Image 1 (cartoon, rainbow, N blue to C red):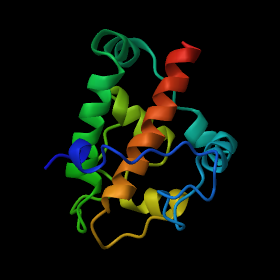
Image 2 (cartoon, rainbow, N blue to C red; image 1 turned 135 degrees about the horizontal axis):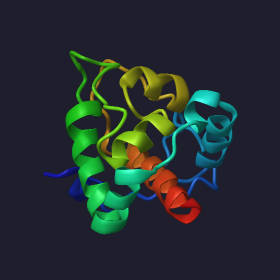
Image 3 (tube, rainbow, N blue to C red; image 1 turned 30 degrees about the vertical axis):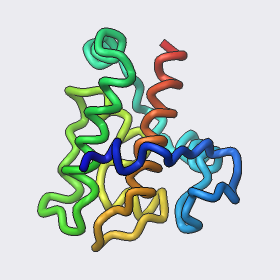
Length: 144
């Protein structure tokens, strides 16, 4: 079963800390994005050139489908042999989004999103990561 199928009905707006689908250990999206904006490293990421063109050409749904695949294969497993190095810095808009939002490795997921390492991501956590990436990508599309 795909991540999209598992998380079809799980949506996070980030505006309500008591959102029924947001596990309490994960961050409110508004708080998260405010924190990311204070990080010189995280705010240095923006879509440009080929990555921005790819997003415009393929469209957000296709890029998010790729992001779901990256989440499933590179972030969701309990053990990731190359954790901390599994996400390239360029080559796909989702990769840039992952670094910009600290969804690039399990260490960053723990530090920034309060998602503990050492176990598989739950469907809710995977949906949360996808939602974080989507929000950043939408912001970048509007900015460009």
